[in-house]
Amino acid sequence: MESTSRLVGHPNPKNPTADRGAQREKGRKPTPRRTRAPKDSPLLPLSLSVLGLGHEGGTHGFFRRARRTKTRTSSASARPCSAASSPLPPMAPPPASSLPTAVLAWGSGEDGQLGMGGYEEEDWARGVAALDALAVSAVVAGSRNSLAICADGRLFTWGWNQRGTLGHPPETKTESSPAPVDALAGVSIVQAAIGGWHCLAVDDKGRAYAWGGNEYGQCGEEAERKEDGARALRRDIPIPQRCAPKLKVRQVAAGGTHSVVLTQDGHVWTWGQPWPPGDIKQISTPVRVQGLENVKVIAVGAFHNLALTEDGILWAWGNNEYGQLGTGDTQPRSQPIRVEGLSDLSLVDIAAGGWHSTALTKEGEVYAWGRGEHGRLGFGDDKSSHMVPQKVELLAGEDIIQVSCGGTHSVALTRDGRMFSYGRGDHGRLGYGRKVTTGHPMEVPIDLPPPGTSGGDSGGQWQARYVACGGRHTLAIATWTEADE
Image (cartoon, rainbow, N blue to C red; front, side, top):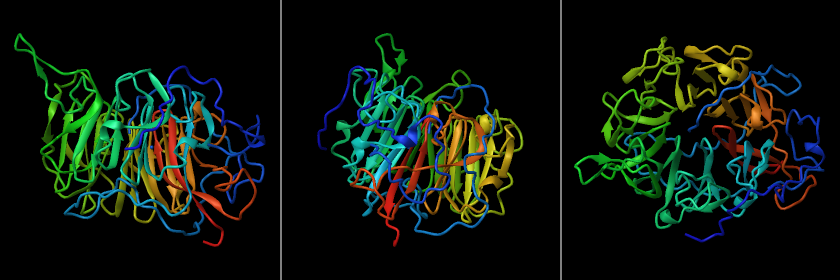
């Protein structure tokens, strides 16, 4: 792996690339529908999360809501961590896009999780300049840190590192610029996940790795035996190491204090503390989740889990305090149970936030359930919890191809590259210029100049291809498309 400089030390009080220009001036409203980068745009350089509480804001209608009309079509991008049909083959690194690509970030930057060299929060989607020269194929946003996977298999991390979550011993508590994980230089990473204080990754040979917080065994390391015969877990594991070595892994997912993996034979295994700490004893070695066969993709929230099988059935287990399992009640489940109300739908993808869940159909429709506070489910002014899946009518007709769930907000991505965010709005995590909390999906403008220029109009536009919600920030990948393409 190439060596790049790691910027550490005191927070930079002013991002040197943070020229907001006229479009960022106070009171500036975002362009409701993005068609191309504005001429005066300045050159602007990915579950899961720790939840926070705060006041709920109202709906501000001057931001464009999701349209109900049919969208124009363009090529869709595959979700980097989606599983293929069974039997599941080893994952290959996602191909590098032939189009100009930019990694976008917005929201809280207090731990450097935006990757812009400073610690300011951003209300608008901005480019991460440090990743411009890299062929980034996937991003993950955690509670206070972030990571990016390159097409050549390199893994870059940035943000909070007090527990070793960046993959190396902490020299400082936070790092605001992306840097490679040197301990994984000899392998090709194809997919990764961030939990409460730990991270997981899998390489192209199906080998899984873990690092970060380990007080509940979430990194999968066996407890060390002390002189008195007692066993104790290492609290932190700052250097990535193999976990679940007997399993051939296809996808990894991380919860608040537990880990879940999907193997190449379609089985699901888990370890760590799968319930809120103190409820049950943690386990540090993988245990197979019984009753699940031919699983296609998994998603993990703070303390709940989802698994979509090849036959289109969605299963859930874990904590259910807000109905996030979709079973019509709030009773927790230690074994997978079928999610209600989705049997007549063709599901293609799933996502889990801190305490809410979503499912996506092949027709591009979104269903949501679980905790509704702050409007994170997208049901407009209805901020109550829902114990069974309900269609997000405010996204009807938008042809959604991906939904990402954060701690208290969500973002939906359309086939033609637009993003709609909704939920808690403080710290700018919704990305459209105002820190308002709303349950109405609003479009996130991408006001970057054309690639290779500092402005001007080349007749093309930036289109989002992937989105990742964290605790208080959001990441996305966008590609530049010329007008005639």
